[in-house]
Image (tube, rainbow, N blue to C red):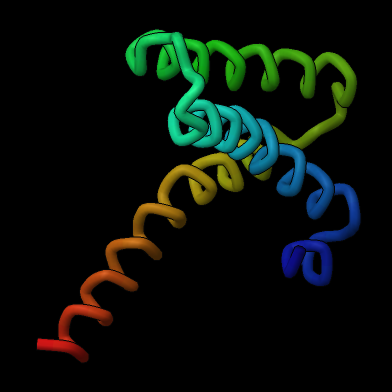
Length: 99
């Protein structure tokens, strides 16, 4: 959303949609794996996650042909990298505070 201040509303919206394309399938897989009712193999869930993300990118660029690909892909890359990095940082911080 900070990009909206510097680059405009459309860039901010592109980044929001780009991160949603990656995070929504990831959230679905996480809830499916932790619900205890999942009858689908984790391998198939992973393949479905990436297939849904690919379909999401296709839909995004069809519905918004004027989207800036760099903004969309930068946000999706951040959405892939930041959650695990925050978890690792939190675990390291937690482990160093309680030896």
